Length: 150
Image (cartoon, rainbow, N blue to C red; front, top):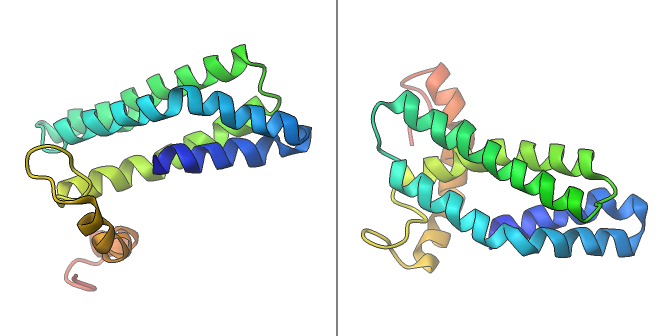
């Protein structure tokens, strides 16, 4: 739901230049497919989060799935004539890059899982601030090992 809300907001904002009705229609069109598609993304990411070889897992999660999703996104919005299609999809792709990495980072730490091994959603939400901090500091920790340890 979070992804659908954020992307809906992005499609609304990027299409507002075409007028409020166009922006509202872009959100409605996005909602048609976004919730099931986001659930599909999350299920695949969870299933593959510890798959080996790691490079293949990252290729599927980081390239194949988003490529499929953005192809669906483009085609649906194109069929419904979303006015600012190029800008909207580019913003969505940028969000995908960050959210895909964050979802994988979270799931590898046992957060935002469903089914076996899952904790209640409210517990995951309590862990979110620290998780976001760790995620944002991860590149620094990789660059300077032994510093800024969690």
